[in-house]
Image (cartoon, rainbow, N blue to C red):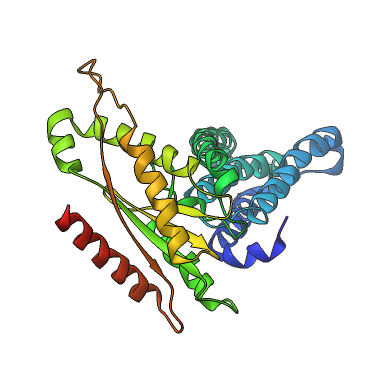
Length: 300
């Protein structure tokens, strides 16, 4: 676990602290302490361990995951469960006046809500792991941002690529890498003819082909629409063109069969490549490769 991640979860930590404070205030503010003879110590140990483990699980999540919707849902769900567990534990120490009897009645409700939220969070976590597992063999060893994965292609999005290019530019030999931009020819016409669902499926299959043609050190992201962008570390421009041409050839042989017909549809791909220059900037190199790609498509 990386406890330095706790500094990035101040809001969630405050939420947990507020939950604990509220449960203490409600229980001891509305109830009266029981006599020692009335306390069931076995119940205290059992119910207290549930509350304690809930706190441990929350801390484990916060110390293991970056901020994001899955992390938030996991913590919120466990927080609801913790709230019920604390109320259940504290009522072993206090008994409530008639006006506060409702507190003991509804103490299990937050736990039920928390289980629903946790179920949603675990499903999203499962989807996240599927996406990561498909990319593990062809991803860099840097920090992963799970909330920046494109839902359709399961590739990272353009913002993630910008961050990785910026990291490359900041290295000691920051100009020794190349960028490739890929664009599916006539993709709008394909969508109009076969529908966006088939278009999404085509994007997924093409993204898999792109990954198959990359090296373990390379990174592929969905840039926008039907455009993909590749980061090729320690790669000369000639090698980048060669690799892009191999991807182009693979795409041209992809026999895609829409559900509405038995005949295969073949697609083509345009590409452009640029190598980083000394004192380059992220926007500059992306702008150049986009411009080159527009020219290449116009020529075609």
